[in-house]
Amino acid sequence: MTTSDGMAEVLRSLRPGSGVDPARAGTRALDVVGVAVSVFARTPVGPHATPAPEPLWCHPELSLRFDELQFTLGEGPGPDAVRFGVPVLEPDLERVRPERWPALLPAAQRLGVHGVCCFPLALGGARIGTLTLLCDGKRALSDRQLADANTLAAALTATLLNRRGPAGPNGTGSDGPLWPTTGLHRAVVHQATGMISVQLGATLEEALVRLRAHAYSSDRPLGDVAEDVVARRLRFDAVMDDDGYGPHSPAGGEG
Image 1 (tube, helix red, strand yellow):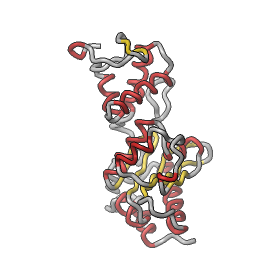
Image 2 (tube, rainbow, N blue to C red):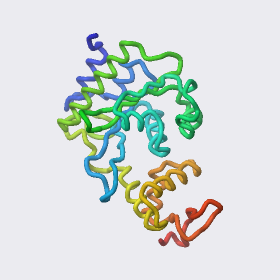
Image 3 (tube, one colour):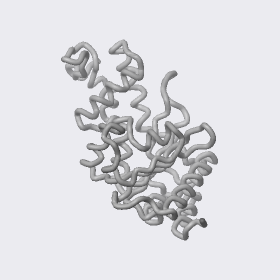
Image 4 (tube, rainbow, N blue to C red):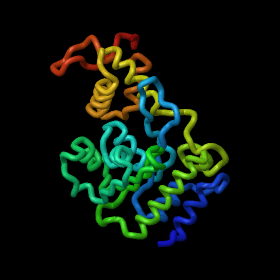
């Protein structure tokens, strides 16, 4: 199946200096509720850190909010697509078993997200990022939509590997590397995880679970909570609750 005219416009928007917003063009060409692209930073923070997905561009804001939700909870079609290296297509989230993504499904419903299809940006065993499509929950993707989405995922992968394309999270199409090399908002999560690991004497994996649990229970983005930890406004030691050590705010914000 050949590439549609709309997708051809999206592919042109990936070129430096195109002046086309690829997120808006992609949403229109794919006939979906929203589109988001996240990529992995090249250099994780800390010796044991794993790459965190950084939002590259999205439309509308709901796409970014859902991307942040998956990152906060650590579950959903995006993380699964990266983990297994295959597309995860769930155009109707009401048909997904509750135990598959127990935290994400009710949160997505509250957010107003009805369906999600995620495509890994990958080459061989290398995971580069994800392409996320928000769906209306009324129908599966058509053959045309699937072909165009796979074409876009392949083009994004090639563009990312060539390190040329839209600069910044709003995809302006200006000259510059497509990789987000500065201003990595989610790198702070790795730093906070390391600090919590030291505070609790726990593994990094356990510390990240604690961080995510606190962000979810307080209904805050994971990055915001991580910034509080790094700024020593929030600690996860010294105070015991029914479940063990609980987060608390040191007096005067001193750690």
